[in-house]
Image (cartoon, rainbow, N blue to C red; front, side, top):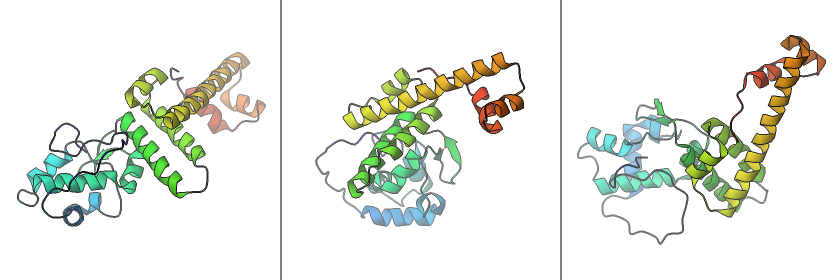
Amino acid sequence: MNDTSSESTPAIAEPRNQEPKAQPSGRPAHQILERLFQLHPKMFGARFLPLKLGVFHDLMALHQGEFTKDELKAALGVHARSTRYLEAVASGAKRHDLDALPVEDVAPEHVHHAIMEVFRRRQARSKQDLRPWLHSQLVNAIEASGLGREEYTQRVATHDPTALAALDEAFAELAQSAARREALKRAFAASGKSIEEFADMYGMKLAEVRRALSEQTKPG
């Protein structure tokens, strides 16, 4: 969602306890969302995708007289807070325009906060421990961001104990993986063998060795 204007729906942020807000006057959000589905079925239909920044202004410009600002803002807020939308953001998918074309990456902090919110919602409904899912999602998100620990932590700016503990575990795994890759690279360089011979010598899959040797070590 657009996070650059007070008229637009804010970008996804870390959930905070807030008092319920009064509903704006006009048509209810579900009616506006039904109309958005008619106008843009690829973005407001069965498949949810992260929306590009500025989509509020795009919709207002494209469909003048179709919605009031308050109606559209409320509807987009409902859409952005839905679990299905948060799952789309948490997946790491790019932001898309109204034609469902990818246009930009979702900021790492928005991906992170979406992952945490999806985890909280799922865990509240499940008797299973979903922390392994959370761990996997955070490891993938951190790797995809290309950021080191300090910059990533600054970007997400969380004080939530659950999130902080999960981040510690994710960064610990990433550090271990980086150390294993470096050890593998040193062993390969010292072996004097081809990649195929090296993989066979250590009983490793050739594709895994190629991937490990080609990966750059990210800062911790």
